[in-house]
Amino acid sequence: MADLLVVLTGGLFLVIIPFIPKLLRLRLCFLRWIRWERVAKRLEKHFQGQTWLLRILFFVVGIHFFYLYVSFS
Picture 1: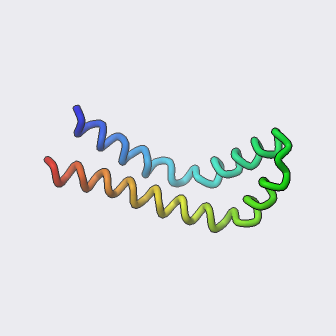
Picture 2 (picture 1 turned 90 degrees about the vertical axis):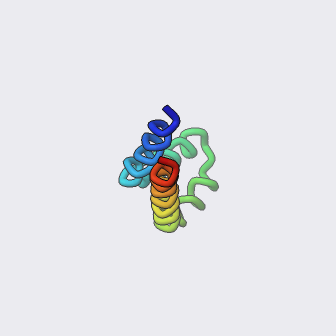
């Protein structure tokens, strides 16, 4: 059961990668909705860098979970 959980978690991280820009834009919309304009502008200024950073991070975490599954099987 734990093996299945590790594989599903790794797969989830890899599936979310294409949706990261939309999730970051949703965060910006939420910050504007609660009137945190200054924070939203700062995050919008570094949007491209944050997108690449999260994509790389999610890829590494997803591959790490798959590696754990293969090494313990």
